[in-house]
Length: 215
Ligand code: B1M
Image 1 (cartoon, helix red, strand yellow):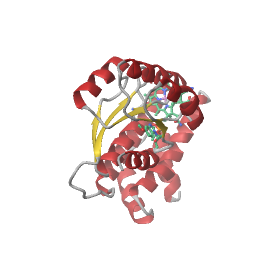
Image 2 (spheres, protein in one colour):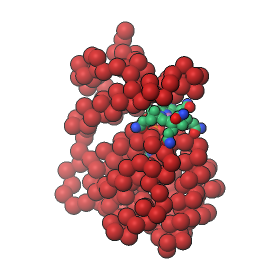
Image 3 (tube, rainbow, N blue to C red):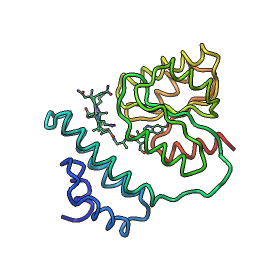
Image 4 (cartoon, rainbow, N blue to C red):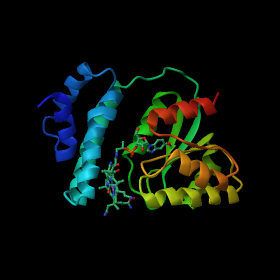
């Protein structure tokens, strides 16, 4: 099989056998490590999502695919371009919202923001509004980053925005994840919040929005 298909297949099959040598080859073939993730690896993940939706994969198998994706990202991370700025561009408090365990996208955002001058404090997954509010008060971030992939997570972001507003917080919120859209962000989340709410379609979009906020 050609390299892109082999790379996608590791994710679909949930196997790491041969993955690292192929990733090394991909580093030669693709312009950037991120292009490997956004291209063949994400294509594999999309196929996993499709098969899972079709009842052709079970959760345990999807979990194995996630492990492969995580291993690939961990391998590629040291090769990603790092911005050598010494002073921090600002603090980002990052979390996957309450009720949601998906963290591959969030972790990618973490890597890209911290490689580009942001100090990222990652609260992990299933973060309740109460925990988020407590950490906002403790950490005093410049930006709150929320990730969520489930349809119910989009609704959870609305509730989170309401709770943050009630707590008197109005720093910019960056939201992202498969179940979200710019329209939902604008029509459903933003009206519930005092401060800015911005939708990022992917991790690089998240970086450019964060950069704009801090300039
Ligand atoms: Co789940 N899952 N899953 N899953 N899973 C989806 C999301 C689903 C669409 C699959 C499907 O049915 N086709 C579906 C949601 C359906 C819905 O809500 N309508 C689904 C479901 C149903 C579930 C469970 C309910 C299954 C079950 O138990 N019956 C369960 C939920 C558990 C829970 O959260 N409470 C569940 C569990 C899991 C696993 C644990 C097995 C595993 C996650 C492992 C992990 O993350 N550690 C998993 C996976 C892997 C997926 C799919 C296949 C892939 C997700 C992924 O990692 N993509 C997914 C289907 C799909 O998306 N195609 C699916 C790669 C990742 C890099 O992309 O996270 O979208 P993504 O991030 C992108 C952008 O969205 C954006 O940037 C990234 C790209 O650069 N982005 C941000 C994300 N966050 C951002 C934040 C930002 C900025 C950009 O700023 C702050």
